[in-house]
Image (cartoon, rainbow, N blue to C red):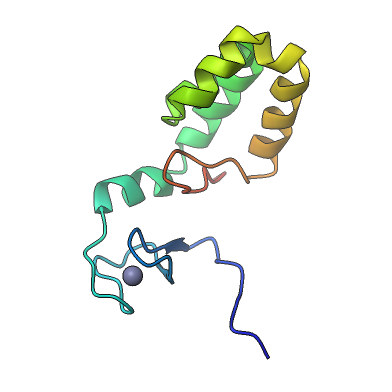
Amino acid sequence: MSDVREKAVDEVFCSSCGAIIKKEAEICVKCGVRQRTQDIKFGAVTEKWETVLLLSIFLGGLGADRFFVGKIGTGILKLITVGGFGIWWLIDLITILLGKFTDKNGNIILRE
Ligand SMILES: [Zn+2]
């Protein structure tokens, strides 16, 4: 049996050791490092899902969805390539719809 598992929707990876901890946890149970709760809260704010979705549909070709979640680097790349010539735009849109889109900290942008 392996103890490697997927993190649940209410869980996040520890910013220090990478252990799976509860999204609400302030301190990692494994390494004792205090989590950057501000960032974790950002990922937990589910109403942003609709904003990200709308940005992706209408301004995805300009990388607006990626800029919004803090992914500046890939946002610029998406802007330059005009949404990866439409392909990247479509992939990101599907990812958001499936509830698998993440912000710069790896927090999933969840649908409410
Ligand atoms: Zn840890």
